[in-house]
Length: 468
Image (cartoon, rainbow, N blue to C red; front, side, top):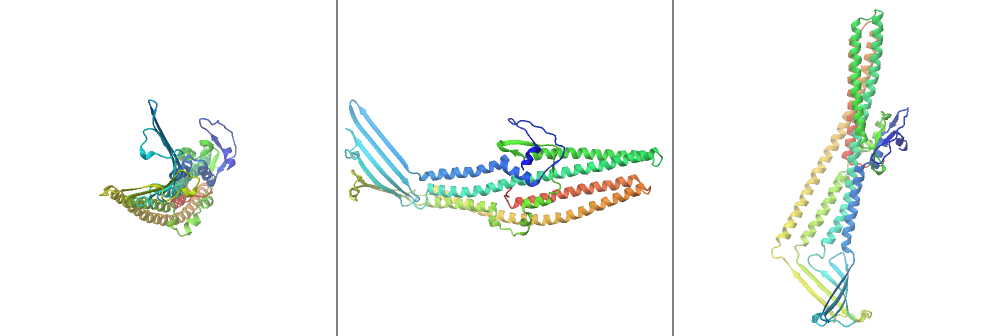
């Protein structure tokens, strides 16, 4: 691939223009081209951002389990009187289930302090636990968020592969279009060369009286037709080349443009098959359960099931139990005992649960919708893959037929030209044979393009992410 850098011209706001005339033509192979697309194309880099986003969300959800230190200080001083001077420090450790460990320190003083806030002079220490016995014990928002973030990360990897596969598929179609345009250009160049030689020969024949003057007119018409076809082929190749350049980038988001002397590989079939692993895709049984799209939907369904469990848990009453050992001498373990404590119980329960029941119903509907999507996608993929395999078999046969037809058209043209040289045929028949050859060759290029495109479709339908 490094040699490819010699064949392109960089352009952009910060890129320096460079030009170099190279006499020989340089071939851009299909696998080299796709390698550059996969490595440097902005859309591929965008696909990588999906994974970065999933990792950021996973980090965010894990933050709900981070230990937390809280300090609350308040003081009121008025007319040389300290109404209150309160300090409260708390250290909390959330756990996986609805259990939270915490330790606190209280130091309060003041002339108008609330009696319940009175503590020893050196402060009061406590250590305990808060437990959600009903809603939030087996699953809560932070647990669900973390589980879904992990699933989203796995789903993002699969979605990345699908995005990359799609851009490689689009890039492949453009390369095949470029290849077809190049083949058509070379065809018209060769045909024009033959027509011009025939024209010069007939013109000399008229001068010596061997050909009628009207033959010169007919030969000139054929030359102009070939010139017209050549110009149209040049325009098609120019457009295909520019379209191909849309997929060629270098590091630092620098777009590149092909030099005119860079050409496609006209013998690309073996490379295409190796790049797409066509033999494996055609022969191996398709296991749709391991298809990236199906696996992505499975992760989506699993995430929705986590959400459903959370919504179901919301139907339970909120029962919060708080228990803390208290002591003024935390250095002495035996000072923590059940006789000195502070605790509490909090219970709440909506009477009708309309919001909770509505949320649960919506969660179930989303699950059903995704299950329907999984079933439909599986059938569509299976039918699409089977159809593409049969289509590929048909184009293999069509390629063989058109190859034989073009060969026969060439033999007929060669024979007609010999008969014309012997005076046993007419220029009209030679031109007619040549037109048939052109039509047959153009049809062969079209079928070859469809043949390669069908291979790309099979590659795309299986969402393969090849190593390039």
